[in-house]
Length: 633
Image (spheres, rainbow, N blue to C red):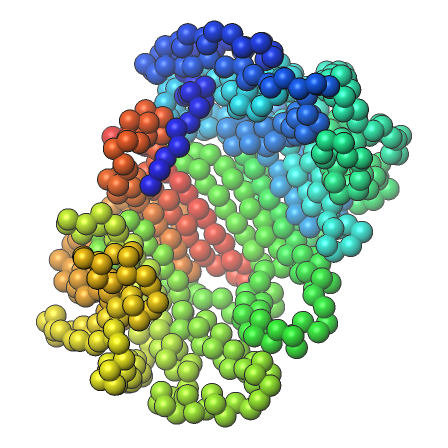
């Protein structure tokens, strides 16, 4: 792999306050001398970017960037920005129409305890051990990010922070047609005069560069329309419309959205905050969050349905099976929040299910005690066989329409296999995908699957039939295919080997002396569990697992699962971020190692683990994701 070296100006922020550099000029100077921080890191001061000379001023798209930076930089900072103590009430939602398809909000004002917890979280990273001047360091960070934009002449601390109130949001509204939704960004304004002065400066700079934005009036508000490309004229959907309302900066791709926002603020139209669907979705959520998101999936489905031609099912009949199974679990809405704790970032999602949906019940894992403890990642889902059987059933029903004939051929296939296609997967219960650490002498991780079995007799019969078919293929002389078995205690491991030449894989990709590599898939059925892996050694790692060395007995895993709501779950994912980093570091080319060690590794060291847990509260599915950090080891 190749790791690109980051720009030298993007170094870690230090603990000592830094001075914001003046706006960049077109004249390059001597590079500033780095300053040492209290953490012992070298802080490269902001290096002003040098804009290439061009007759007639800067290119118009740079003024797009200048305007967009007002929104993008603030939105990017929503998780780790200003530490203040303003009120927790959202300022932006009062401007959002009730029919919004999506509404996402970031809180730069860090309501409640979030200022202190963000500071504690960031203290695990280089340059943030001293939390007393966090705001200064964060402002410096955003200045550096803006400084990387070619031709940009604005800084966060001087041009944005003075007028920002503390809430930023993005909403997606229904447009004139389902294929053209309106996107609108909202930035709450604390100082109207300073915001107006900054907008006036951006407009004046654009004019000086020969890219004059068009001026119009919408509902009494002045709207500036910035064209999307050099020499183009502003056109609907291809330009950025910017308006400064009282207390709110609005940026959108469609000027109609400005009218919609004005109608809500004036009371002529209902706001999203008054929507019963939004109230129901957000009920019970804490107000002290860094960010939140609301998705009206019911409205989105209507928008998508309006885009699908009535002839689509007939034209693409095999597309309907997946939809038929998936729609059984599509929620009516989704509401999520993001908040910080002392050593964690916690994301929560709540999704009410439609009437008649039957989600998998929450239960304790029956598999983690049989998963190797050196797992880098583990993903478990419940009732996999039922979901796969649903999909197979729907596909079978669609095949006659897709082929334009009768299901006779399908019946012949099932007769040859010895049973209905559904029966080859329906016996699977809960299942987990395991990524194991590389074996001794290897560099790449291995992958395996383990599953409970709901019907051992059926599973034995169907796996035996598949093995017989593979044996017949090998006996018939089909090139590159072989089947073998071996014993591991009472378990029989079956391995299907296929040379890459039989799969049309070029032999040059591997194999000694140009010999094509072989793909080996092994499986076994033992003690009510089905195990499958890439080669018999993977299967043996499950079967021969010593007592007390499973993932389920690992303290880090147990703690992570419990912190997210376990051990009873509706399915979960677990990633050992430290082990994943160490595995990846082992394959970094020597030529890239010094760059990695200096510029990347220090920021990865604090990441400890990630766990995602699904649950069920009545008819509402819940998902909690937690990223945990700790002091570098």
